[in-house]
Length: 41
View: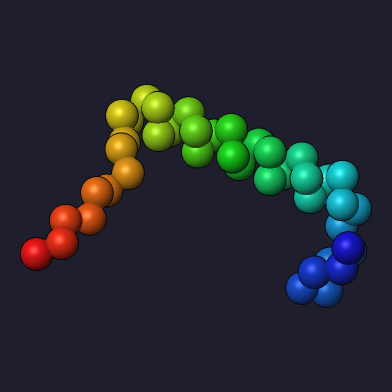
């Protein structure tokens, strides 16, 4: 995969994404963040 002029194997990109998703899940869990509920007014 070529992105922004940088060639990166798909496996490497997948690994970066998985690490990012894991860290985001940890942050959301540790901060007890909940999705906003939109209230119609």
